[in-house]
Amino acid sequence: QDAIDRKEKRSETFKAAVHGLETDTPALKTEELGRRAPQWVRDNLVTMCMRCKEPFNAITRRRHHCRACGYVVCARCSDYRAELQYDGNRPNRVCQECFIFLTGHTVLEDREGKNKGILEKGAAEVSSRSLLCSSLQLLDKNGKGGTRGWFVIPEDDPLVLYIYAAPQDVRAHTSIPLLGYQVRDVPQSESRHLFQLAQSRQVFTFMADTEELKRRWMKAMARSAAGITHPEEEEEDAGP
Image 1 (tube, one colour):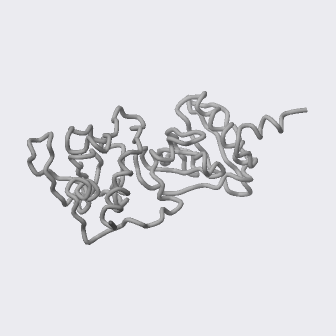
Image 2 (cartoon, rainbow, N blue to C red):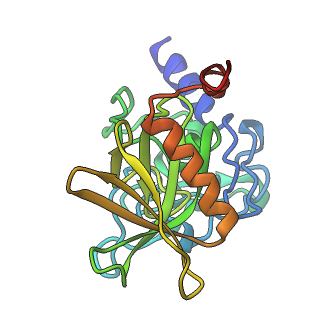
Image 3 (cartoon, one colour):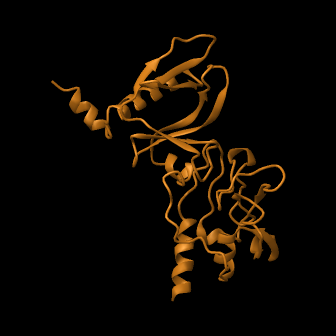
């Protein structure tokens, strides 16, 4: 019964749709795993294994695709083989979760049951229920370079900005509590759409791709900085 419960719990993870942010990659339904070829998540949309969350690098941790679900995974997490119906029942490289689902076998290393840390929520999962999400660039102190990533304000944690390296990553690399910050506009120059978060001596400068996207982020951040967690609260504050 315990094995059945574990298998059913794992199968539920495949029922949540991965919306394929910035892609046209639909998630396979549970019953389609192994029966239909998946569309692979593009390599450039992830910087870490979509299963164990370890960062990829060019030498010791390379990217592989699970032939059952299409996720980008590391060699350790894809060191399994299962027969796939769409490929004439030939053994194919699959991730651990698909291996267990397709074969019913268990494995010695079991990460099931670990509670997700605050930064361990997947970008696709959080973005599908967000107040606002998009690509932005967080500039360095000189305002010349910086880190481009996927930025999200989740509905269930609306006072925090989560920053992912890529829109399909399974863990955020940092977060910024927005409460108490001031949102400041930066005059447009050289076609750069800049705005800032400022609190005491701490200043974050962001660059959006368009002026319209910049305004949307300024409004969302200002709402979170003021502690407004629902749009209706803002309407009440604006009332007579």
